Length: 357
Image 1: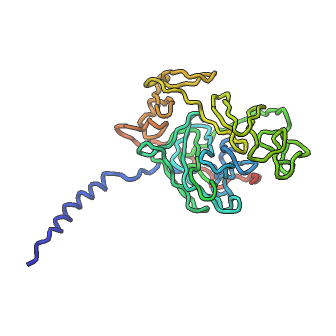
Image 2: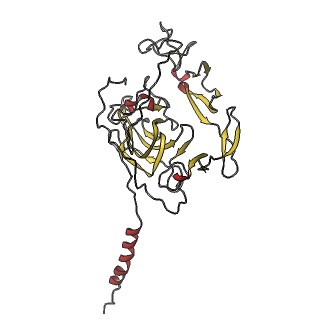
């Protein structure tokens, strides 16, 4: 005779448990806003987008836009290269869209992974971290033409954002768009200033190292670069700080207390001077003479120990990242119930003279 089966019993008892787990543990949280922040629409001024270096002699922000045919390519294929956005005021940011380049120096190229940092002042930077509080590495592209979108685990509140290519195919070629709660940017007025020497377009005249005044006639051959004193290779171009020249491999400190080394192609690689840790709840602060002192945070703020910055107490545990620590160990993590009113950016850029590529 056949033995009785218990399969129906197993099925009926397991099903409610599985259903309960699926209904009580959320897997993803929809971002509060997913507006394009305006690079592709031409709403970011040239002064708002900067790069660590560029293969283009004259970088223009439009080169990095999703609709541009080429994309930004740093001078060096290094994970220390970055593209930076200054949104002029603090904004809520929720993600990044990326593409590669179909013809990066005669071959398709794209970024396969990248990291993101953010800042309130452009000096103190916070890495976006994973839920495990480790460095977050975002998955990038798998070809040169498809758009890949990554959303942050929590919205970020910041004025400055940097994207660092981490790994790549052929070379780090990137077109991108920040996502978040778009608001029109304030108008920046700049006063006309005079320079000590007239700015002369060097294109077609001479290969000149960055920071060196132009010369005519050119003293170098077509393949050499003028460093202000002699003809050299592009990789041996020096770094210029004011009127001081630093050869490749030299180390120096800046007025902002940054510690720098002049790398190949005359590209400075700088890092902020790190002060020794202070006692709990005290902030390590650099003095004008680049010394270190310990100070408490201003009233109404609380220290983020990982970032060594002070954040408003009202921003703590509000569901939006202001630093690496303000959303950790919160009893509840509410999503913002009233995100700032957003203004959808135009879908096409205003008519302008095409920038140099």
